[in-house]
Image 1 (cartoon, rainbow, N blue to C red):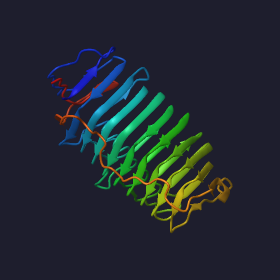
Image 2 (cartoon, rainbow, N blue to C red):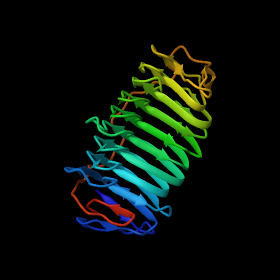
Image 3 (spheres, helix red, strand yellow):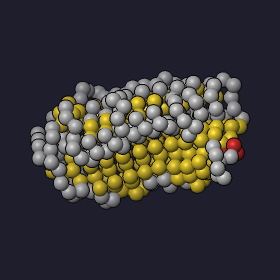
Length: 314
C-alpha cells in the first residue's frame, strides 16, 4: 500500500496518478505514508523526491523508504522549508547528492519531530557533504540511527540553530568523514541523552562531536566508544558530558583561540562500564505489508512546491 495525500484536510486520496512532468501543490498539509522511492537517474535540481519552500506547509512522512535517491544540486531525497516537519519510521539508504545533504534538508519554523529515522550508507560514492541537516525550530529527535555513511567532507548529522534540541535513544555509528566532524551542534542549547557514539572518525582536530553555539549542550547517559582521533571540539558555547561511558584512545578535546579553552568541554561523573548499549540497526520501518516501489523518472518541475513520484492508493 502506498498512499500520498496532498490535501488541506487529510481525507480522501489520489488514485493511480502518474506525474511525469511535475506538479505543484498549494495546500497546507502534505501526508506521505507507506511509500518506497527509488531512482535510476540523477534528478537535476534540488530535492530528488520532494521540494517544499513555503512556511505555511505541514509535512508528514511516515512508514516510507528512500532508496538510492539522488540530486545534482543538494538534498538527494527531501528539501523542505516549512511550518512543521514530521518524519516517523522512515528509512534512507544510499542517497547521494553532488553538494550538500545526501538525504535531507529540513528547515521548519515551529517543530521538527523525527522518530525512528534510519539513515545508512548515504554518500557511499564519497560525493557530497552532510547526510541530514535540521535547521531552526524546536528539534525533537528520538530513536534515530545514522550509520555507515561516508561523507566526502563533513557531518553525518547537523543540528543547526534550534530553538532547543531534545534528542534521546539515537545511535551514530561507523560513520566516515574525509574532512572533519561527524555530528555537529550549532546554535543555542540542547540536551542529548541515552545515545550511542561508536566508531566514528574525525580526520582533523575539529572532533567527532563539534559545537559552535551560544549556550550549553548537555550530553548525559551516553556511550562514547572506539571513536577515532579528537572526540570533542567546542568552537564556542559549552559542551558538558556527564554520567556517560567513555572508551577513547585519541584526544578527548581540542581548540585554539580566545574562545577555545579546555573548559569549553567538560567530562564529569563518568561511568566505568557502559550504562546503555544498543545495537546499530539499518532500518526501523517495521511495516505490516510490503512497500510498493515507485521508480522515479526524470522530470521538469516548477514553482515552490513539487513532488516526483507516482501517487497510488491501493
